[in-house]
Structure formats: structure tokens, C-alpha cells
Image (cartoon, rainbow, N blue to C red; front, side):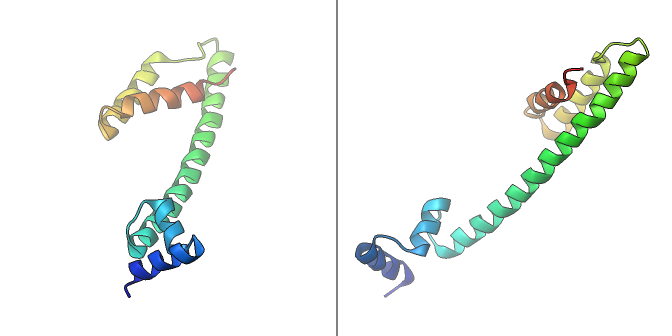
Length: 112
């Protein structure tokens, strides 16, 4: 009996198996693919944690810039700088980079 057939037979008897659960979680049709997907998702989760940390750090640095600009009599937001950032994200990531940069800029404007 193949692994898939064994898993199907086990599923019929017990209602659940580890392979079935992994396949359901990942949408994979083989245990090998489910393992690859699970490992990749763990890496993505770790990357997301790092990205969130970097965004939080960027927000803090942006607040320092805004405070210094306001203290010197300037405006909280520098539109020419924001335009540069939008262009950099668009150039690096294509069209979807623009709304991503807009969201990042919105997060970093803060409530100073």
C-alpha cells in the first residue's frame, strides 16, 4: 500500500492523520511538498517578524526627524522627501511598491 493509500485508509479508520493535517494546512498533495511549504512558511513568519521590527524602528527614527523639523520651525511632513521615497519603492518593487510606500509613510507620520 502506498503512503497516500495508507493515509487514506488511516483517515477512514481514525478520521485524522498527521499527513492529512499537514496537507490540509498547506494545500499540498504530498508529505514532501507539505514539509517544504511548512518550512517556507516558518521562514516567511520569521521574515515578517523582522520586517515588523524594522518598520517600528523606522517609525521611531521618523519621529525624531519630525520633532527636529518642527522644533526648527519646519513642517511635520516634507513632501519632496516623501516623493523620493515613493519613487524608490516604485523603482525597486514595481507598481505595487507605491501603495506599500504610501502605507509605510502613513505609519511613520505619527501623531507629533
